[in-house]
Length: 70
Image (cartoon, rainbow, N blue to C red; front, side, top):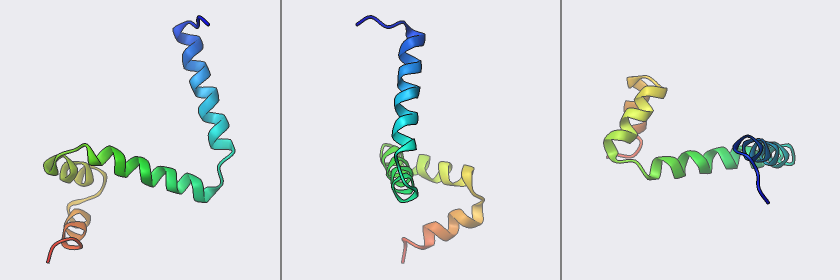
Protein backbone atom coordinates (compact mmCIF):
# COMPACT_ATOMS: atom_id res chain seq x y z
CA UNK A 1 0.00 0.00 0.00
CA UNK A 2 1.43 3.33 -1.07
CA UNK A 3 0.18 6.40 0.75
CA UNK A 4 1.29 9.95 0.19
CA UNK A 5 2.56 11.93 3.14
CA UNK A 6 -0.74 13.80 3.28
CA UNK A 7 -2.75 10.56 3.16
CA UNK A 8 -0.63 9.03 5.91
CA UNK A 9 -1.11 12.11 8.11
CA UNK A 10 -4.87 11.97 7.54
CA UNK A 11 -4.91 8.23 8.31
CA UNK A 12 -3.11 8.84 11.61
CA UNK A 13 -5.50 11.68 12.50
CA UNK A 14 -8.55 9.53 11.68
CA UNK A 15 -7.13 6.66 13.75
CA UNK A 16 -6.42 8.95 16.73
CA UNK A 17 -9.90 10.46 16.51
CA UNK A 18 -11.51 7.03 16.49
CA UNK A 19 -9.52 5.89 19.53
CA UNK A 20 -10.30 9.07 21.48
CA UNK A 21 -14.00 8.91 20.56
CA UNK A 22 -14.17 5.41 22.05
CA UNK A 23 -12.52 6.39 25.35
CA UNK A 24 -14.45 7.42 28.42
CA UNK A 25 -13.25 10.28 30.63
CA UNK A 26 -11.44 7.93 33.02
CA UNK A 27 -9.44 6.41 30.15
CA UNK A 28 -8.64 9.86 28.70
CA UNK A 29 -7.38 11.07 32.08
CA UNK A 30 -5.22 7.95 32.49
CA UNK A 31 -3.85 8.38 28.96
CA UNK A 32 -2.96 12.03 29.63
CA UNK A 33 -1.28 11.10 32.93
CA UNK A 34 0.70 8.24 31.37
CA UNK A 35 1.79 10.44 28.45
CA UNK A 36 3.02 13.24 30.74
CA UNK A 37 4.93 10.83 32.99
CA UNK A 38 6.47 9.01 30.01
CA UNK A 39 7.52 12.25 28.29
CA UNK A 40 9.08 13.63 31.45
CA UNK A 41 10.86 10.37 32.31
CA UNK A 42 13.20 11.08 29.39
CA UNK A 43 14.19 14.48 30.82
CA UNK A 44 17.01 15.35 33.14
CA UNK A 45 16.33 16.99 36.52
CA UNK A 46 16.93 20.54 35.27
CA UNK A 47 14.64 20.00 32.29
CA UNK A 48 11.90 18.67 34.57
CA UNK A 49 12.18 21.71 36.83
CA UNK A 50 12.15 24.06 33.81
CA UNK A 51 9.11 22.30 32.34
CA UNK A 52 7.16 22.60 35.59
CA UNK A 53 8.23 26.23 36.05
CA UNK A 54 7.14 26.97 32.48
CA UNK A 55 3.68 25.52 33.01
CA UNK A 56 3.18 26.79 36.55
CA UNK A 57 4.75 29.56 38.58
CA UNK A 58 7.70 29.27 40.95
CA UNK A 59 5.38 28.90 43.94
CA UNK A 60 3.79 25.74 42.53
CA UNK A 61 7.21 24.43 41.52
CA UNK A 62 8.44 24.95 45.08
CA UNK A 63 5.33 23.27 46.48
CA UNK A 64 5.87 20.25 44.25
CA UNK A 65 9.57 20.02 45.14
CA UNK A 66 8.73 20.23 48.83
CA UNK A 67 6.22 17.38 48.41
CA UNK A 68 9.07 15.02 47.51
CA UNK A 69 11.87 16.33 49.77
CA UNK A 70 12.20 16.04 53.54
